[in-house]
Image (cartoon, rainbow, N blue to C red; front, top):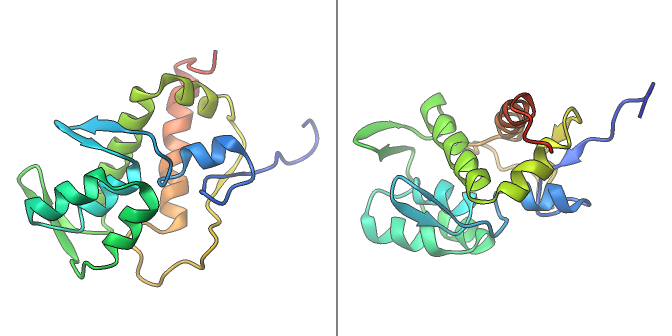
Length: 160
């Protein structure tokens, strides 16, 4: 699109493009991180909202939308992962979400290539529901993480 701003990619289950829906945290794209299998990035994200093993295991196996609903039952503001305790919504939490997205893309190289091929289009996150106040992963943070990951993929020539 020479001379015009490229159309943004809406990374959301409500997105109008397949690549946006597939990159959504809700997308069924199983991956393993630190020895645990997750049904989706949302499953990982929600597992962090619990400290007990049974709830984490339940969140890990749930599909994205079901994991999202399950996560609403948590009032946790601080989590623990890898022996470290930190606030949900902080930089350490967001770095873990980025690791989960990278693990998803490593498990699905076709998706990584398709996502990298969208470079340099802007990434947005527009959902069916308005953003919840106090969300631990605001749209701006998710879009920043996704843009950084996509830039890394494109710089490595993953688009081919």
